[in-house]
Length: 356
Image 1 (cartoon, rainbow, N blue to C red):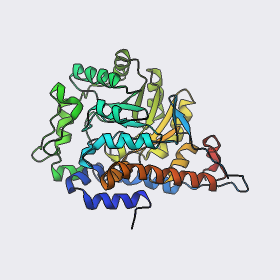
Image 2 (cartoon, one colour):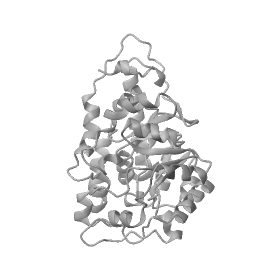
Image 3 (cartoon, helix red, strand yellow):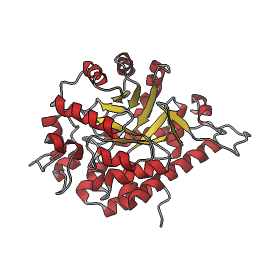
Image 4 (cartoon, rainbow, N blue to C red):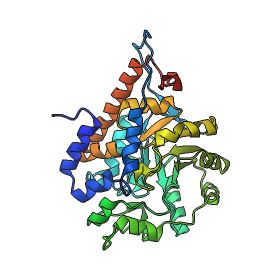
C-alpha cells in the first residue's frame, strides 16, 4: 500500500534502513519517556471546533522572520541525512523549496552547506553547535553566511549528548565515506566507532564547548549580522534571558526527547513561554509533530510555525526527495483539512479558544 501518513513512511524507512541508522534517527534518551510524550501530549489536547463558517477558501501561508512560507511547517535541523539517501541534505533542500517552506541545516550535516544552499529554492537557516575550538566555530559561521544562509539557530540544550542507549548498543558511528562535512576543513569531520559507547556521544563530549553561557550568545551576535534564534528552551525564564541577550527567536525544543529524559513535552510548555515572550520575538516549536492537527494545536497555542524532524527523515529514507516532498504535502493537506473542520480559513484565526 502506498503511504498515506507519516507513520506509514516510518514503517517503510525502518524496513529499508540499516538498523544502526534507523535506531539513530528513531531513538531517544534513556527510557525514551520524553520521546513518547512529545507526541502523546498532542493527543491529549482536544479541539473545540466552530461550525457554519464559510471555509470554501483557506490560506495556510505565513511569514517567519520576514520569510514568506506556504505553510507553518518547516524542516527541523537533523543530522546525517546521507544515512537515509545518497543525496542527503541536498535532496531535503530541494523538497523544502518545492513545498515553499524553509529548511534548517544541521552542523552535523553530511553535505556541504554550499551544496545545500545551491540546491535550495527557499530560505536556508543554519543550526550551530559551538566547538571548543572557537576559530572553527567562527569559520563555520562565516561559511554559512557566505553560502547564503539567512539565520543562525544556536542549539543550547546539548553541552553533552543524552545517553541514547540504542546508539550505545549499536556503537553508532558514520559509515566509511561519510563525515561531518562542514567541519572537515577544520579537522573535526571524523566520527569514528567508539568501543563500548556511541561514537557521536564521544565526538560531542570531546569537541563541543561545555562552558557555553548566555554571554556566548552575545559573542555569536558580535561575529555575524545574521539573526540568532535560541533552540532548546523549555522554560519561560530562559526564553526571557534569550530575548535579553538579543535572540531574534525562540525554538521550544527538548531535542526530540534525545537529551534529558522526563523533560516535559514541548507542547505542554509552549503556552507559558508564549505568554512570557508576549510577542517580542517569534516562537517556534519542534518535537512530536506527526499530524496536521498537531500543527493546528501548536499554532493555536501561540507558535509561529512548527519544525518537523523525524518524518522528513522517514520520507527521505523511503523515497529520497520525492518522499520528503510527499511527507510535507501530507502534513499540509492534514492541516488544511483540520483548519476547515475547525471553521478557520487562515492561521490568524487559530487561537486558544479552539483548545479544550
